[in-house]
Length: 62
Image 1 (cartoon, one colour):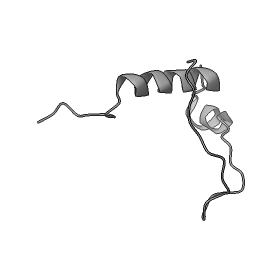
Image 2 (cartoon, helix red, strand yellow):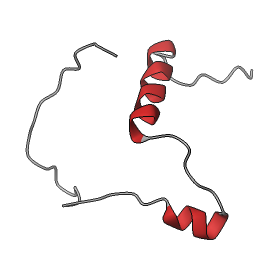
Image 3 (cartoon, rainbow, N blue to C red):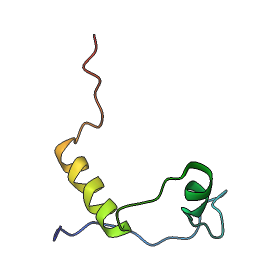
Image 4 (cartoon, rainbow, N blue to C red):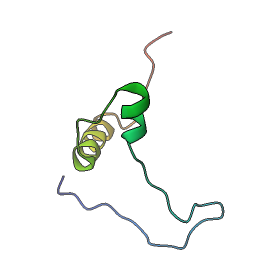
């Protein structure tokens, strides 16, 4: 946290949806599963993983 992230605002790309969102209520109804973290917590966790794994996921199997 606390680092600038370069970005550029542009128009939509061909094929981009005009709007989209997620709702975890279906997961609760269908799978009896619910979220435990906020969107901010999930973003922090993802950024921490990305910083520590700059090469992405690498399988250790030969």
